Length: 83
Image (tube, rainbow, N blue to C red; front, side, top):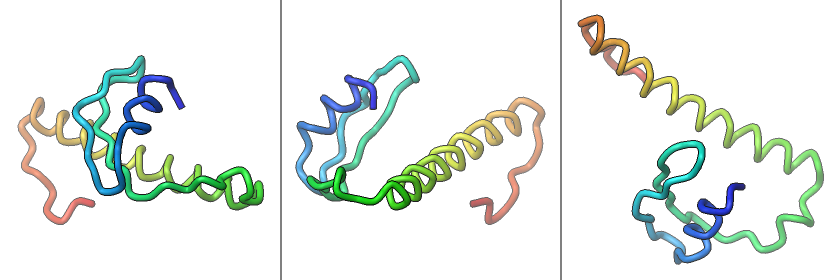
């Protein structure tokens, strides 16, 4: 986790949403859903599943954003029910 992201997340209380946070990867808005203090006690398999789930969610949102941007550039109509 990049330092800017960590610093912003550390200031949040459960349920709060951050102001935009700038890092070398772009801008982020963070919502703290829960605090898991004992992450190190998870098995490597569990950690891997958690990371893969997060990557999938992030990539899905990135794809959706880029797809919508391209649609606007080439004047295509939006696809309904796109998730």
